[in-house]
Length: 49
Image (tube, rainbow, N blue to C red; front, side, top):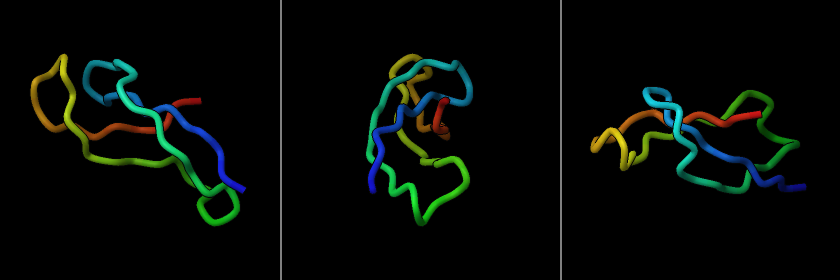
């Protein structure tokens, strides 16, 4: 089963991206390095609640 999750920048906190996550195989929060428009650089984006 897949679930839609929102990714937020770890530096400024803006919620820029959404993606799908496999709930059964990954138990911890998703962390992806992506481009943030507010920071104007690549930062780690983490899954929000």
